[in-house]
Length: 101
Image (tube, rainbow, N blue to C red):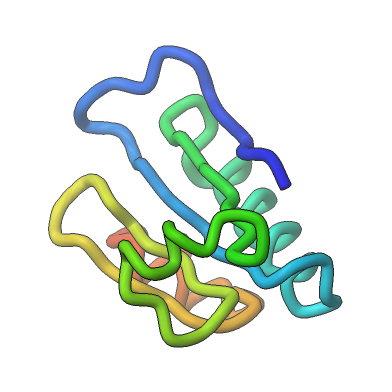
């Protein structure tokens, strides 16, 4: 899988990593959900990297993952982790420090 990168990410912008396990329905749903959410709420202000733990297992070890899909908000601080298919938009927005409205 490849990342969805926005050009010109500034230090105050969002840096996100989504770890998925292959092309399962749950992984594909997580990719769709976070991509849509980022485009709607962070347009032009995010860098989203999608990492398949089957293709890059060393990254799963590096980040001490225990489940996939897992979204890690690297920046802005504080760092946060969210596990699941990211279908609960309100929960994901709250985890990112954004409001649904």
